Image 1 (tube, rainbow, N blue to C red):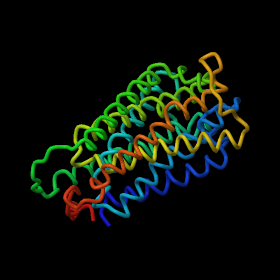
Image 2 (image 1 turned 30 degrees about the vertical axis):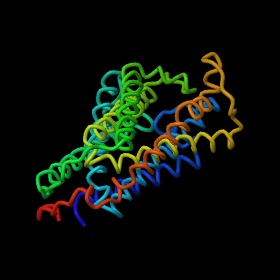
Image 3 (image 1 turned 60 degrees about the vertical axis):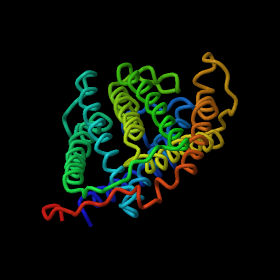
Length: 306
């Protein structure tokens, strides 16, 4: 097994298991400093840190199971997301007066631990894996072809989605308290760092990945269709489960009803429709996932990487 597949296996198992834990017990996320005082917050956590993050774990495991189809895209994805989380957490800790000391107790020390123990090491590992993949990939001849309407539709969908995520996440990276419309109570520095990192820089680079897939469809379009279909289905499904579990509402009104109606609004106005749009795009472009002519060849593993 190559270094990249080992990394993806470890990432997939950890993210999937952590997500299932939070899905079962949303209050457990208090270990990072989340103040869970509002019903809407629990539903938001089930959707985001339950099923949304699970989609990344499952996508990583897909890359392990079918590396010829998904590995390159998965390595590119994590080469963006881990550095984004590391840089975002570093800047947020410095900006909001957090501590870089390990072992000072939760939730104060958890952010330093995530930065130094997880995000920086995995950023380096994935960037090295990406470099090894790019430097040793076998060039393949591909006859020029004009994109059909299905591919143009998928690329436009990815591009617009990426811009939306970049815009929203960029705003939250600058002003983390903007996420209070979801029901979060953002007062302490651990909570502020958490929001600035995950909803800010992490999701900004996820949007960048969407734009990148639209620009480089030959290598990233098929896997990106799978990933974004999973993401939006997970978000919508997580909100449905959360509303049913905690007795929330499926009705939504105007901004004055926030945060009580936030989850319903997010589900009906964005995530549900987006899940359908991406599912249609996935079906129309399924050959980009399964067609051998569109699969990036796997590089030979360097001897130093096993």
